[in-house]
Length: 188
Image (cartoon, rainbow, N blue to C red; front, side):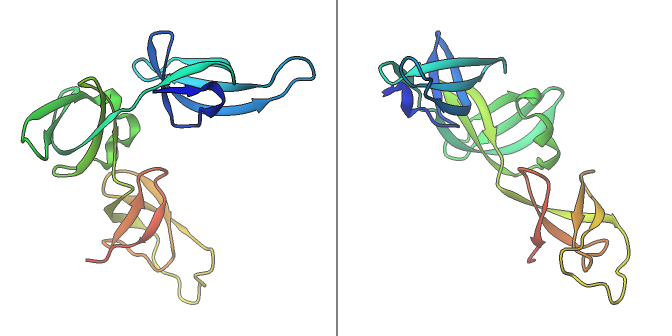
């Protein structure tokens, strides 16, 4: 679908120079001379290279819609991760480097969303939160107030985070996959 050059927003996927790019940052600029333009930082979806490009309101760009489908994570085999389509039960594989550092939150049976373009997988989205177990943390200090005080903790997947003082070893906590921060105690 063609869109106006000024309509690009962060997170949009566009086709530019015969490649697929995701808009990372945008900045509207109106110089003293000449027309206004949109300065866009683009990231290539296939190889991760970056490009800064200017788009004017008079230009049209091709916005790409990615297919999103839910898959269940099955297992890891070397550099490949194997997933099963929730509807057809067909299996597909993704390269481990496509997921990157978020791999620490993956566990068997997890439901993820895989984005693809014309049948070619481009990325994966994890759930917003996961439940992990605290394996190491400092003991609770009596009389310590819970107002904005946190203590370091080590989770069962090796991630270090900060938790409130009332959380102790062996407890299950909800962690944000976006930034590895504590959300709440798990309700099991």
